[in-house]
Image (cartoon, rainbow, N blue to C red; front, side, top):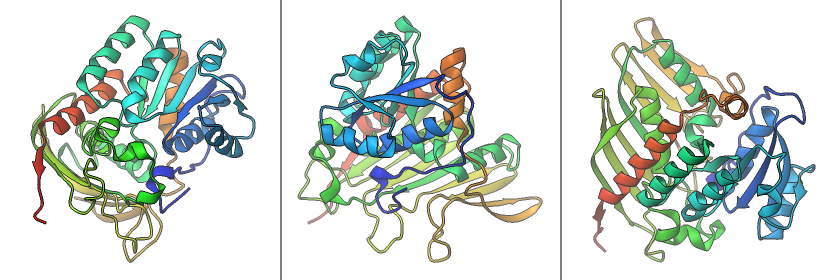
Length: 360
């Protein structure tokens, strides 16, 4: 787990296998983003077997094989797509290429698990919706800031249990460390990464829908800007947005690439949930100046105040649920409608965003 670089942040939880060894096979394609390591680790910990990997860059395959020694490095995408034993393909392609890859995967009769953001245009979303309808395959998304963070998982359990009543407001902060020298060229190209609200903003909107139980929302306002990255004119290093859900719950989030070097992790990600009977604050990766560990949950309700440190206690149930969903054709890990709606809303927020031009 790399605490200083969000691009290669791959948490490890306590394994909870849902299938017998060598019974659910998956492959990895397109290793353009380091999230592929977390995606693969989560599936392996849940009992899946990573059998094949393909990327045009042999060095990327070699690096993945160093983490998963039993995987076979193959010479083409077709070696995976045409393999009848592979049930799921995990991929972290350049964002603008994720939908087209997923469409090819699904047309070959396999489910697809992509890094966020799953699309960079509304046209891609509509095309993929049709492919899902035609093929009946799954197009699942790695919204890691909820799915692969134990404090976020635990907060969801608290909400489900009614610990704070109905969630009426969500505020999310998703700061990231830029670490520009480690980033590939595509990271700085607007048509490749889709914009900051489309990219890392997708985590925030997905969380809002999940915690408030909304199936849709409206973008009230959004804005983006480039404050300190003038050498990368197509990069947006700041963005925020305000939404309201169908049930009246509201949402504000802020994302940026301004994490200072002095912070012990790649970003001080926090989430605040206000309910009708209490509040929850999640300090995901660090409790600044108090505790270098992550996964802190602060709960306040009529029973009092609680500080819960849940690292190593909760695990990451999404991955096992996804495997079982692929086998049984269920939707327990995440519904297809939810995955698509979160993607749609971040695209709309990006499309509607006011562009801020900071004074020189």
